[in-house]
Structures are given as C-alpha cells and as structure tokens.
Length: 112
Image (cartoon, rainbow, N blue to C red; front, side, top):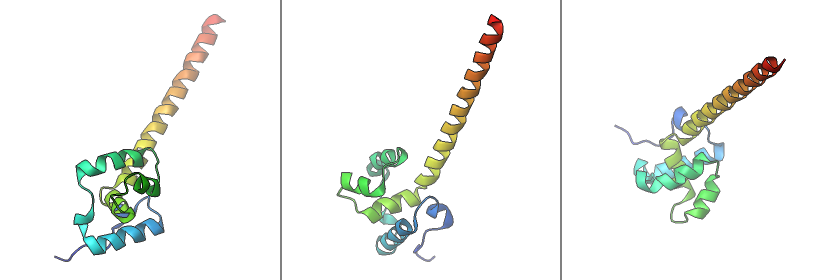
C-alpha cells in the first residue's frame, strides 16, 4: 500500500487551489497523521462552519499550522458538511417564507 500524497476529488471540494497546495504539502511531509485529532479539531470545525477563514482560524489557534488546519478540513470533508448545512438552511427558509405567504393569504381572504 502506498502512502497518500494527494487529496482526492472529494477532499478537494470547496478548497481553493492555494489551500489544496498547502494541504498536500503538509500531507506529504506529515502524512495523514498530521491532521488534528477529533478533540483538537472541534473548536476549529465550529469556526469553519460559521464561515471563518483558514487564516483567521490559524491566528486564533497559533499552535496549529495553516497546512495542518486545511489538511484536517479536507480529510474530514468539512466543506461538504458546510455545503449540506447551507442547503438545509436555504430549504428551511424557503419553506417558512411559503408558509408565511400562505397564512397571509388565508388571513386576508378570511377578512374579506
């Protein structure tokens, strides 16, 4: 079995070319063991989900390198999680707007 040197397409999802290069450079140097452990990654994951940039995360947690943070996000598929969450939120907002419009129409037709 060969060692992993590059991110696959799923792991590249949502990352810029520069971020992919940083993650792969860190991956080649530290292998997959370079990714943060679950407990360490939790706070960074939360920051990622609310839209914090990788550079801001690294400033907040200087004990981790930028490559290490990006590699963790790529290997754990955080961008895919964020995309699913955003899609779910959009669907919920759309449903609430439709419900509000229907209730307004019902109210107005009841008054008349």
